[in-house]
Length: 77
Image 1 (cartoon, one colour):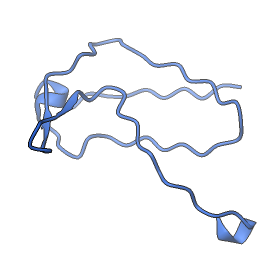
Image 2 (cartoon, helix red, strand yellow; image 1 turned 60 degrees about the vertical axis):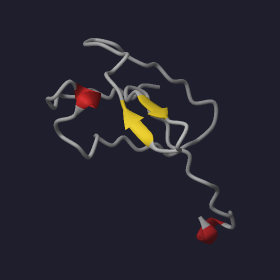
Image 3 (cartoon, rainbow, N blue to C red; image 1 turned 90 degrees about the horizontal axis):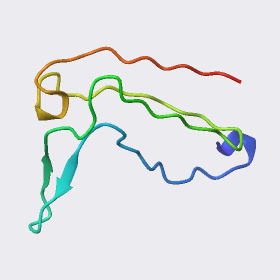
C-alpha cells in the first residue's frame, strides 16, 4: 500500500483444507485430505486486515476427493 505510506509485506498463503507434503527431493505432493465434510475453521481478527479466499485451481484432484464442492464464508462482527 505505497499510497498509504506503507510497504507491502510478503503474502503468506495458508492452506486450511488442502493436504500437501514436501518430499525429500523438494517436490510437493497433494495427498488425500485430512479434513472432511462439515469441517470448519473459525478465525478472529485482532487488527484490521484484508483477506482473500480462493478455490483450488484443479477442479478434480486428490485434494477435493475428485469433485468440486461449495464453500461458505461468513463474516461477522
